[in-house]
Amino acid sequence: MVEALSTSIRVVFFDAAETLFHVNGSVGEIYLQHAVQFGFQKTPDSLPAIRQAFGRAFREAPPPVFAATDPVKIKQSERLWWFDIVHNVFYRVGMFERFDDFFDQVFQVFEEPASWKLFPETRSALSLLREQGLELGIVSNFDSRLFTVLRGLGIEQAFDTITISSLAHAAKPAPKIFLSALEKHAIDPDEALHVGDSPRDDVEGATKAGLKALLLDRRGEYRGPPVQTIRTLDEIPTLLARL
Image (cartoon, rainbow, N blue to C red; front, side):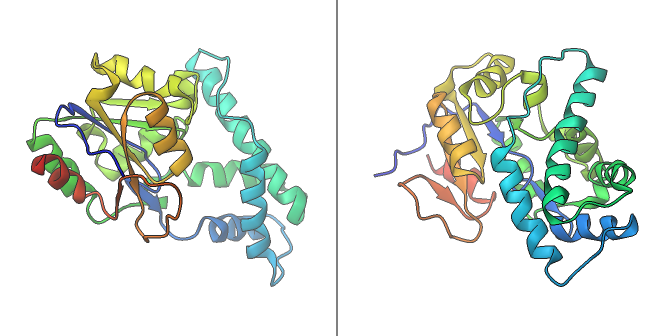
């Protein structure tokens, strides 16, 4: 039986991508479109091959955690991390001469707010939680481009804190990143709720750190162990208010 949410929740943390917002279009199609501009030879199998290669590259990649503390060096480390992933993908599906120029462009594309789109209920859900007197935060493995994206989407001011892996020196599902976020609010783990779309990174990670967790399962496809699930962010204020 899934444990009920606590009535003592003071802070609600959110994952970022695929929870608050999503790519405006298809990730694979965006990479393919830009690769073709720089000499990639497209075939009918290119798109599914790119999607499959990205899945494998992410599974094989180390966590986005770096020793650097200087902001400039952190951004360089983030960029190199992504370069290795994208290079891994096109090494498998077809390398091309102007890969470095392609990467420069596509890395910038995903920092542009136009490349992302808020889910329909994001603004209203955040506003309702604010009206309930809750503090809000983000806990994400997204890199420092997140700050530009949030500003561009017009929701940065909704959050009291933003905790990302490269600055926290820990990545979900490690408890350390959640504990780092908790410290900013000066609260105990059981006073926080974390909401995200990943059973491993968001639910398992937050639960191990002592937080309550909600799995955002928009398509109703989750078939794992029993966890508290929601289909949209609009359900959070109602759940908390009812309790």
